Image (cartoon, rainbow, N blue to C red):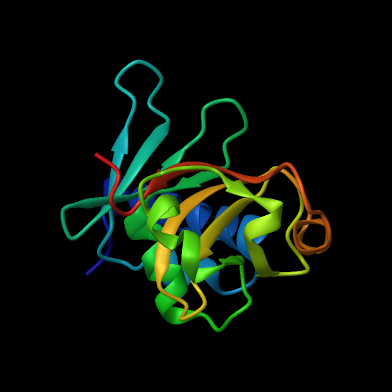
Length: 164
């Protein structure tokens, strides 16, 4: 039985999303983040992909300005649970974990470890020393600078796991 044009186009959109994720986060992340069961929500005005939903939860949005992926807490948890540290991770001291959970920014002086492949502007997953998800955000420093610097914001947190 052949696929309809609509099914073929949906398969193509999933393929594109996976390739963007592989480009942005590394090889293999696309298939972790976007399994076949995802739902794609499009902009009514432009017809472009805006949100990706899995099991009723938004796992990612597509940024209009550059077409890259912005992770939600659910998307970050998918990646964290299926990758090994230090992939995409910024590890903060356990003492400040509660503050980060609430959506506060990560300062360089609180970073214990960071993936050395992190570059400024990239999406990162913030975890505690036990690799428990705390937040998701955008790196302002590279991975090495995060561990070397003693002042300044290392990650601008977009959302924490306990944020209201």
